[in-house]
Amino acid sequence: MQAFLETLFKQQVYNPDNFFLLAGPCVIESETIVMEVAGAVSEMCRKLGIPYVFKSSYRKANRTSAGSFTGIGDHEALELLKKTGEAFSVPTVTDIHAHDEAAIAAKYADILQIPAFLCRQTDLLEAAAQTGKIINVKKGNFLADLP
Image 1 (tube, rainbow, N blue to C red):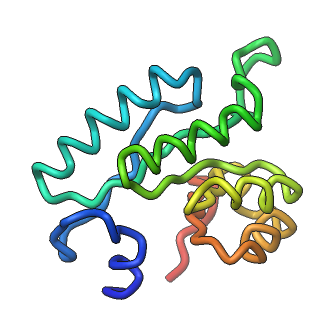
Image 2: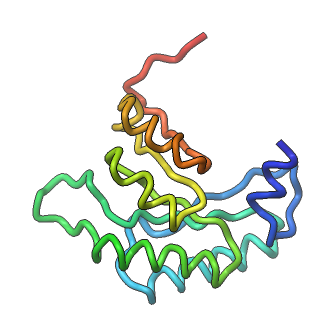
Image 3: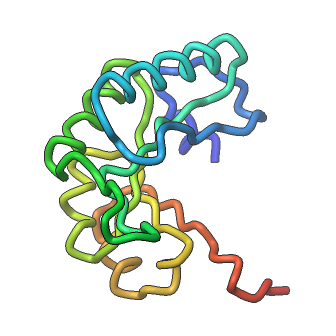
């Protein structure tokens, strides 16, 4: 675990016994917003010794209304995700929603996140694993707790 944390947080000073924080805007809306949020949160985390991962989805596929904002465009948003991580020397994480997104998103993000409502989609999990990236699988509260 120590080697994993050192690799992930190579640019950050932190207490390895502390939790790490995944935080950021729900979806990438603009460069101004992601840079402002990443700057403020990374500075706070540096002061507190908390390892920080910038999290923002490049596209939101799980909206209540089909007319809701889903993103600024995949390529532009993924480029901003990568730029933000590089600007603040923090790892990044983004959601993926379909198996054909995994390899594309893996070129820009350090961690791929599987949304809770997709946590049982075998083809999505396999595609994410094939990228060799770290995967954060959010457990759907509809799943039974295992002993």
